[in-house]
Length: 248
Image (tube, rainbow, N blue to C red; front, side, top):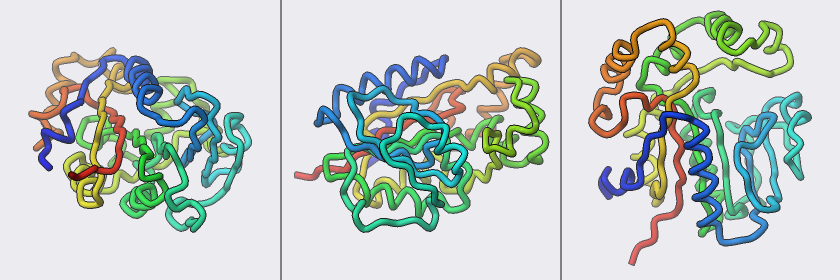
């Protein structure tokens, strides 16, 4: 399977909310059950998806986040790196992992669990920042205090928010999150990307208020490396829908 197969559905959205709306519309059209069993992996305090009557299980390393999330039928406080459950084998119609992978030291072993936990007809949604952009590089290599300061200025998040796990969270950006490596992993396990979007994050837009857009876009293009011919220059965040590859 070539890149053209994985990226056949790829679209870029200048507004993140439009990418999210497109994702919700797509999932409504392809999920095969009226009340899907959903796993929100690293669920945080909210769900980004609008599904019909979901039976949602949330797992998060933060008890604070679990307590704030009102969309869950079941809450599990655990680390995705180490947690496993034999009863979850091929158990979920939809596995969702939203803005979590960039915080994991070993996202590969976690994504491989998602492959096991999804039903044969199930879907997996991965959403995470593109590490090969200005946003990704600055986030990876700048001190945590810089992240806190940026969120304080850009969105008013107080420095004390980290005490109750309201972010910003420490970021790793493991090498496996580079797009081509992720697509390699997906294909090697017998899966495919059936729908993919990118969007320009509010962080990227915020920086463009103080620096010329052309300059920021040029830096993004430089950091994109081997993916610059495949993606929009403002593709600072990815959303993928993954499913098992069906072979004749």
